[in-house]
Image 1: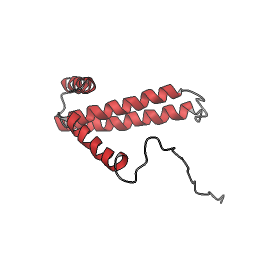
Image 2: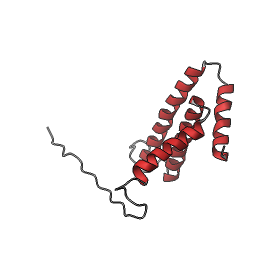
Image 3: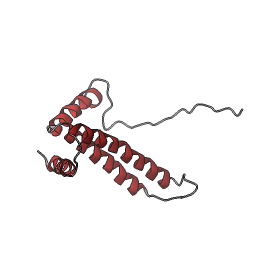
Image 4: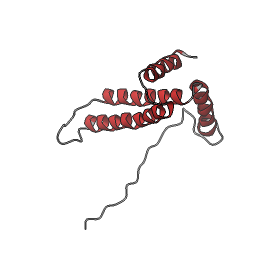
Amino acid sequence: MTDTWETIAALAGRLDDHSALPREQRVLFQLLKIQEEAGEVAEAAIGAAGQNPRKGFSHTWADVEAEVCDVIITGMVALMRMNSDAEAVFAQHLRRITDRDVAGPGTASADDPVELSMTLPSIENP
């Protein structure tokens, strides 16, 4: 087990030790916690862009990064609470993603330039 996964196991164990709920409910609430954390990413991004008229620039992009880390950690803890072999489950899934999207034929190299474009639908006034 890596240091990261040891930490995740310790966090999951601590949460389990402090809950009297049945395992299925603990897992369910941990899954809901991922969504709660994702909402905090959205709030921080809106604040970093100054797009809340009441709050203005209430967050920094460093705050957004920290919230993204919280989502990742919360997801890892959820996986650990679902399956004690979470490290292997994650590694196997990452290999599938790598084979499909990184190492597979016709995929872009990490050295290839990335071009981002977005087409927005036109909105007509009523």
